[in-house]
Image 1 (spheres, rainbow, N blue to C red):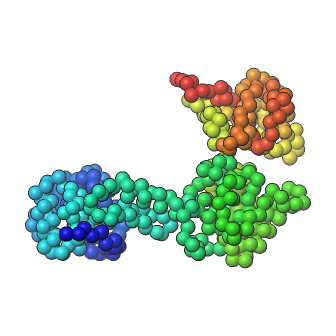
Image 2 (cartoon, rainbow, N blue to C red):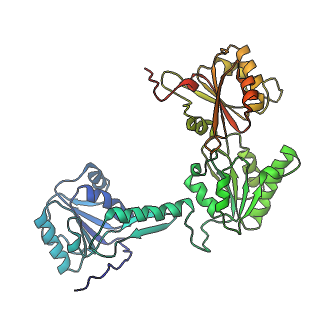
Image 3 (cartoon, one colour):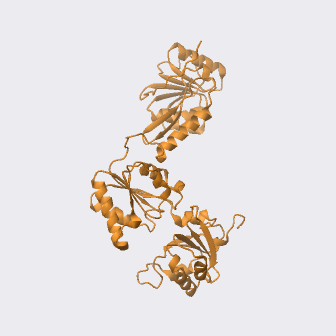
Length: 411
């Protein structure tokens, strides 16, 4: 007889009886989805794993603490047979067949009347993958396909044509330190759904090439009139496009709230009555040192790390950093936006007690193909920056963790 493929269908089990035989690992994996579907679950088994027992104790399922008996499938709409007793499995399967109850067999798929697909969810969509026949069934293959589809839906690389899941408004997305793979899954998905993208120079620029042709990309780094007016122009652009009913993504480097002026943009949007979603990003203050092999904390070396902005010099009246306090810290000091001020910063730290031979590392273009690391000390860093032509963006790490290596063992 010709073998026919399985017919895929979604079961609506809310309030309907589902019988599960066996309380082992199979039941532990399948029960949460049945509970989430609203099924009236009857578990029949003498013993169960602690997790399954906890479901029964919480009242999520009804547990009959005994082996299967004839009649247990009475009134059931669906059954999952997953005991280690082959005779009981066969008897329960026969009862299911007699009462026309769709039945899954964990021990023998060929004898089952239903198969459990590999499932996953993303943004309200359930993906279910089945093989076409019992012959050659490979759960690893179906799971791999499921994972690929769910990942594509989650990160925005797989989008249904002409389908919008996000309402108009602004998403403030932290793009991470530069490597396009280091943006969050949520950030990448929102980017794929955008009508307008206003991008920073330090954002993951490679992702812009993946955007559909209809997406308008505005280069925030090229907005004129200086730094203050540039931020004002960015705010106005966000508001203007959002008021046109468009989905706008403000793509920023690192994390929006770590020296990223993210709160200024949130405040401007709030004043204009524009809804805004903030998506955190991986901050360069931690990720860039890590990419260069530097831990910002290390057992026996540093129990703290402090991140400061170096965009104004320590002797500048606008500086809000307590540099004498920074000099007294025993942990790691991470300086962002401080390449052109590192000489003054080093002098100030030394003047307030930091040892001149304190290790310093400068990591330029961290996590990108152009990444390079330049090492120095507080006493030599200013000259090293000039000699090595270190340019922004670069993350500066100050402290003994700079000398930590993968083989360093601390008590």
